[in-house]
Image 1 (cartoon, rainbow over the protein chains, first blue to last red):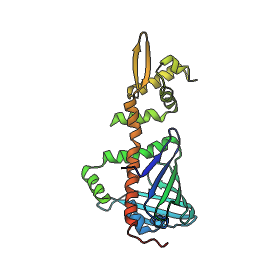
Image 2 (cartoon, chains in turn brown, red; image 1 turned 90 degrees about the vertical axis):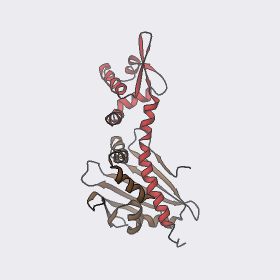
Image 3 (tube, chains in turn green, purple; image 1 turned 60 degrees about the horizontal axis):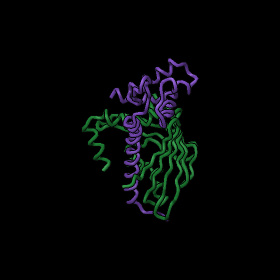
Length: 155
Length: 107
């Protein structure tokens, strides 16, 4: 099967580009980024705040099975053009990872398909490598049953 | 998992990344590698020792000379570390797609 989600991370650079094509019309793809109850489902996190407008703020909170908050993320939305683009910052609270800048571009391919291009800019190439390794590290540290639960949620 | 962490520390350094790049197309002796850098020879030797230690480079004795060349298997391991990150986004986007298929487009 062809990989739908592509990542272009050139050596030594401090940014990377994630692209993905969807079998969804553009308006539905964009709604998935704007409506909090939809964002909560696919990002698997609680949306505390999501002000989709220029100078708006956002905050997400992820909890474990017992309801303990394990990660808080927040940022500011700099540009917001419906069905075109979102430019925002992203930061994980209480971690040493510096804030990152995200440029999201949405485009229509056909009436029934669309595409998102997400460029993430990190503080340095080293910070990019560290951020890339997060899911890698999470995968090996996660207890096996927890991993199973996550996988089940994804299916 | 210590070894793996060392590999990433090894490639975090710009001089070591340059050495890997230099050896991508050819095998070279320590002296030939050092001549490509302004850095002092012992510093380059130290970088070579680190790269060899974490198996990114292999040494090969040819006559009296020791040549350094890339270990392609180890390099592949580095390329593969992006895969879990890609997989994470792929999972999220697959979920997004299946959720939104339940919604009606307004157009």
